[in-house]
Image 1 (cartoon, rainbow, N blue to C red):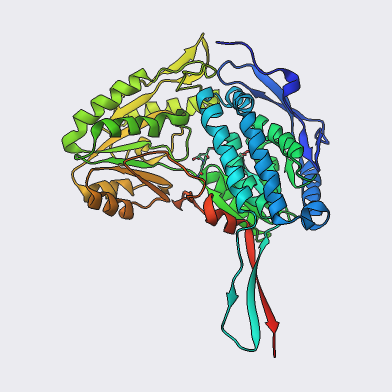
Image 2: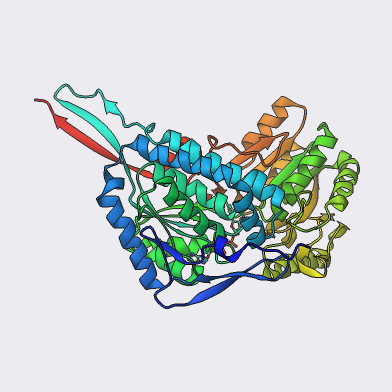
Length: 489
Ligand code: NAD
């Protein structure tokens, strides 16, 4: 494996507050490491309450006065579009940093995540002046209208699986609509958010509109949820963390949106194109090393095609060999941390002890003797009551279950606390649409998996959260409605 990391001067490791990189008041720092090698990439500033206070004060001042507060929406949009172009031109460089920090294949970070993040920026940049209020023709003696106004200071708290991309789904619509943002990236992967702060500054974003505080969720994240100066918390992460944030946000009646975990069913009917379904099942669980909120972690197969489908899936899974994330041909990188690998391994042990059968992978792996790698793992003979069928593993582990008919497919599909995504594979249009309607999930793919568009909303049913990212719905999430009554009598 290439021992080379990033040249130190290419990284930003201080907090970004009021348009400047500054160390934490306490002087504390924490290490961020490359999970593929164990090497330290940098020592990042660890924000405390006082740093958060400064970031919130900067965001509040910028929201209320100065160039950002008086800027035309279209000009805000232009800054974001400029930033999108810059991000696209630096996709290789930022993708490389993402790969080093997260362990994901460079193919994903440079060719998919960074272009998708740029897409989000340009989509919302173009939308900056396209969310309208209404007028109501109800009364001859008054003009009744609504205005869409920014929510205010937005606290964005994001996970480590798609570090910059997840943040962008919050930053781009929030800024497009005139809010200001304080971002707290996950401690495991703080590097690209800081580089992006620098890029936004270069693109012309006024100081204070975007701020980054790096540090642990249990301290600085929790403080954001409680902070009286933050008007909305937009969170992506685990369902358990989301519940803590909801409780903390209640004290100040903050607006909240929650993008949480999943245990998504990928339903394959007997009449499906099995080759396409097998390919889709592999992409559904192994893209992003399975550290994907929408991972198709439960493969639900109609009994009569179980053997034919599984043979294809296992064949493909065995070819997904963990390899150097920096190699352009790698499709399965390192898990984000040693701790995450222990979690995944514990689930594999639990699956075996509950009677499921490992038919591919199942073991730790390494590259050049190093790294938090894990084999592409497929379980067969899984029952809906097993832990590996109910809980989010967040790793490259697929649970295969069978069903006898459409009703059972839907019942098993809906049998977890989650409802983030689902897919159905069939050549029968009516069956596809019936199943898509019956599955309780925020996104349902038909004969596809893991496809996204900036215009199509994404979010959860049930304990996968509420609120929507992307599209018109995201614009609504970052505005509030003011009604105006103009007396004409
Ligand atoms: P996590 O909940 O551990 O952490 C997410 C963020 O919350 C991090 O920045 C963390 O530091 C912070 N945090 C932790 N404790 C906090 C607290 N008490 N108060 C405030 N902030 C706190 O999640 P993770 O392990 O980083 O990410 C994996 C999870 O994210 C999975 O459950 C996955 O399904 C979910 N996810 C969901 C989506 C979606 O769109 N629905 C997308 C990606 C990931």
